[in-house]
Length: 485
Image (tube, rainbow, N blue to C red; front, top):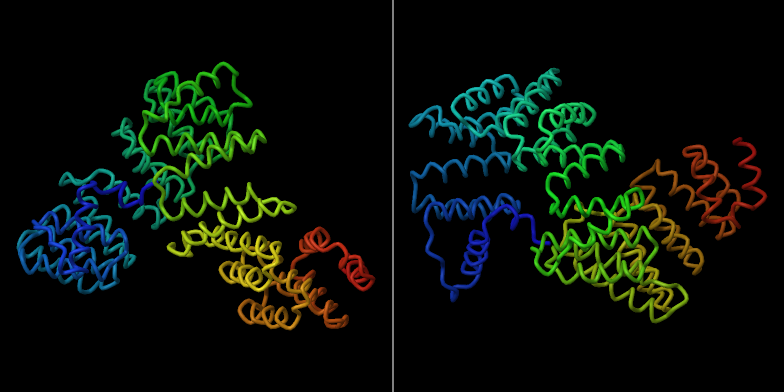
């Protein structure tokens, strides 16, 4: 799939962004001729990509050419706010308001600045003023709802976003905003109640049924979700998303309905987004039905589509995991190639985007390399998996157990001490330290660590019995477990 920025901005704006920065990087590349609105688009893309220094350099250039452009000045306010230069943002807003007060866009921006300073009463007044001047209803509803909610008027805030939904129930954008708010404020049950009433009043509004499907799914009301999905298809028999959902519910649907949904898919006539959705659904369907070859086929079809780095990493990781077979050298080598492609994509990602996935990718690489006899590289990959995400319990276990098995006990002890220096209360680290000390033939010290770990987290007993049964059968450990009963 395309980058998020490509979904928000027009293709010509994205192309302009690329050409502009290519020209800034290389004097031989011609600089595009830019109008005020072009600069605004460039700055907004920079802000969305969190490229704040780039955005400010574009603004400096733009305001040098168009110093009195209101939109560019407002962009500067938003950029100053995004970089926590709030005082400068307020000062510039004041200067703009001196020339033309009560501009609706500036009211919303100022209200947002007040909210960042937790000045919610003042923000509420500005949002109400913004609403009365005909500002964007969604911005007004979201702002007012949040101002009310943080001041203890949660239900009043929720009613505000419900009013917004009722004002434009046929708008996919409004429906999407509604569900985001319902999730953010943990009001899914209340949202479901509202939607049940609205679908009863407007039974032919497919957007409301689709919204009810999403809410029911999150509430794990699968029967309610299935019913909402069938209503969607009754209204629009060609809704490809609803057909995909029906396939996912295939085990509890009439076989003829499922067959109808299969026949509706025509990937050769669809957009990238539609094909990506269909291939994802089919891969999941065959995974659920234990048909790995068909699952792999659709994963490979997915990989022919335009992908961002996260999708590239996730799909290659999935393909590697399905390909990996511990007793088949050819399959291990093939899996390693997929893991490496996933790792290459992950290096271009922000680790905070999906640290667990990136950790698992390195863990898979490490497993393959060890099985292929590449010990040093394998251990390095496993260590990287641990360092990327210490919350990845499997990665922690794999790394330290392999060090013990390969008799790299000094390295193991050094690294577990590193872990404990960072997370002194990590019970799993204490457990692994006990294992290391056991292999180092230091039973008394090992016993202390085991006892500390099991007292801190009793659930580790079951995990340890499953992951290292031989160690857990040791007499001193059996005695510890009896003492803790």
